[in-house]
Amino acid sequence: MVDARAIRKSFGSNEVLKGITLQVEQGQVLCLLGPSGSGKSTFLRCINHLETINGGRLYVDGELMGFREKSDAIYEMKPGAIAKQRSEIGMVFQRFNLFPHLTALENVIEAPVGVKGISKTDAVIKAKELLASVGLSDKINHYPSQLSGGQQQRVAIARALAMEPKLMLFDEPTSALDPELVGDVLDVMRKLALSGMTMIVVTHEIGFAREVADRVVFMDDGIVVEDGTPSQVIDKPKNERTKAFINSVL
Image (cartoon, rainbow, N blue to C red; front, side, top):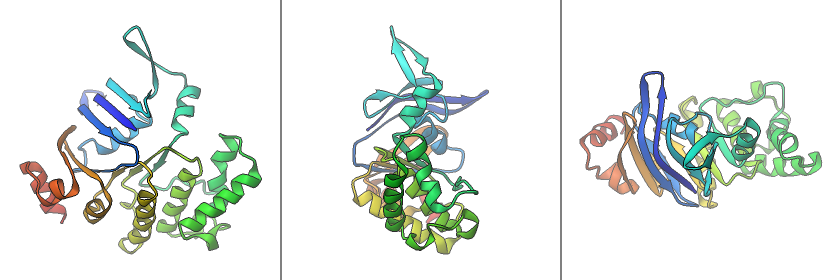
């Protein structure tokens, strides 16, 4: 589903990604671990071309992301074509990014109606099902300001799923939440993983990664330091940098 080949990304003179090569199979749940500044979130944003890579090739479901290839060179696609690619990839951010003037239901139907052209009637039916699946049937007419952080994040997940994505990206989805609200969001993500959704999750929730991930990748200083099963990377890390990080967060 994701094939990243020697991905490089710099901000000015600061090289944040230093040749990331990583493949994620369809239906796989990959958790990205690492300290702040290691490049995890930047890599995630490169997958759906929210950040433009400076080197390498990045394919999603066999399609070159954000660029077209011609005579061994690549050229960035026009915004409309990139937006079409991006519409098949769901992303959930640290901050919920809900439209404050729309209700939970209206937030969820906005993109299917406006981007995909789905009828409002069909979109509302689907949105109610999704909000029920994240435990918010009784909050469909509430505005974001009337919801807790955990509830807003679950609306954000439902909103991403409303586009029927083939891939879901989560950028530290619980880091902005009060500790007592984290569990409800992780429960929704567990159910999503069990449904067979391909997921890449940047997280510091080690327990979640151990329980749900098929693979765990530890990144530091813009490179992949360690890659394996949760038991290999979390419970029996080989690299000293990985060991130090795991010990610091457990």
